[in-house]
View (cartoon, one colour):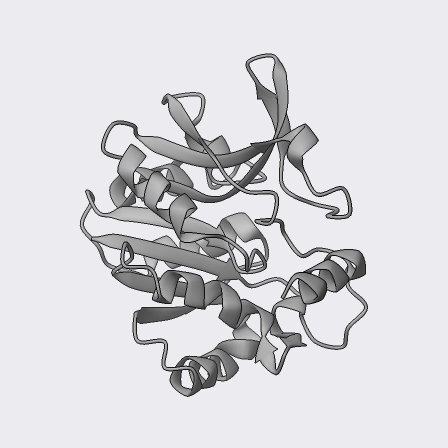
Length: 219
């Protein structure tokens, strides 16, 4: 089974809005719904886990019903940090250890189906897959595309989805719960070979008002 775990439990304080950025409406639809629909409409995804802030559980349930998001199986309360939120999403859902989990940020609404497919296909050969773009390919007005690191001799921006077997990433979130990591691939990259798969400059994370303006313009 191929499962998308979409996490959007933060408050988005860097955007000037009275509500969390993931619930800001673009063309009369919440930003996070665009993200969920990318996985809902993908023929490569079987089920979806949503991890959101405790104050928005009921609101998200209403969104799922209103937009007929039929692949959503779990809606789970997140934690104080992104890492804790993903851990809760993994612990409170029930899948087989060999099932594939794609962990994705709810505020990256422009992920495309080719990225989803490539993540899943490469897990047939690798223990972990990480989406990335080369740093020079980044949209210059996007403020936060992800963790920046070296791949060979080139700078890259790490994106999501980041993909694993369910049993492996659940185990590592438990093993390293007292350590702080900026993303899920960081938990396993010292112990396992990670396959890096090309993402897209449009698959950026909406973090600031500038990013929000850019997303509205693209959409």
